[in-house]
Length: 129
Image (cartoon, rainbow, N blue to C red; front, side):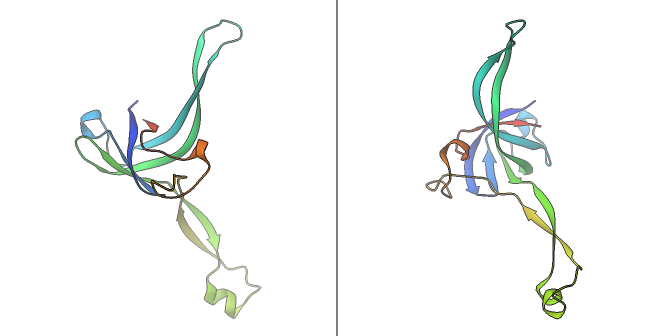
């Protein structure tokens, strides 16, 4: 597992991580951006189970340098109807697949306004998935 932090926010779809090839990062590796919460104790044994993680987003590395990496949010497919198809036949069930990229929630002074507790910030922890 590789642990690092968000070093810079380039947009609501792209970040720079403070880990690179020197840390074992390779292209196409996925990282989760998370907020570390309270530690939980096992109710039976009293053992520390670790900290609760709140996931803020997932990114995939597309460019690796020695000490940093650029990563983008993951994509997903949706079915959509082209405007031409809809105009020519508004009741048509024909559709096409669209690829969309997930967005990260970030602060306005860093990119966009959003609710504070889930906003991705410079310094947020990341780990490989």
